[in-house]
Image (spheres, rainbow, N blue to C red):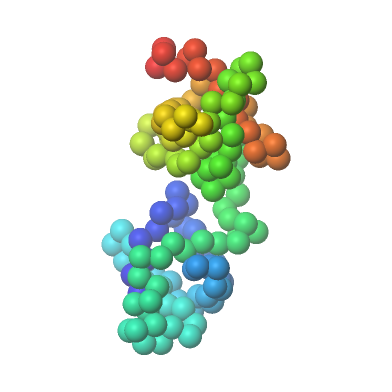
Length: 146
């Protein structure tokens, strides 16, 4: 099967033994880089119909197998779902998505009234992220300066 990696870590699949697809565990038999993708073979996926059933599915890894991050870095799946607050503690919304723009990520946040707020992932804007509290604090006044 051909896989299009969405990871920021190019060597992500080196030594990886298993992955999840739709909450099912698949053991990896073989991985080889090909162009801008990978060719991957899973144990038990031995025919075209079995492989076709996995088409357009998202492949994930267990948190223990996730690549290590530096201080101040977060996985996208940790950011999605965070409640966003301003410096005064007022809830602005909840992060729904993270856009990878090249220069910096952008947190797509949905306000309770349905508005979409785009928050650049910059230290001048994002003051703190607390994964235990599932919250992010931003300085909205800096949004006008950017």
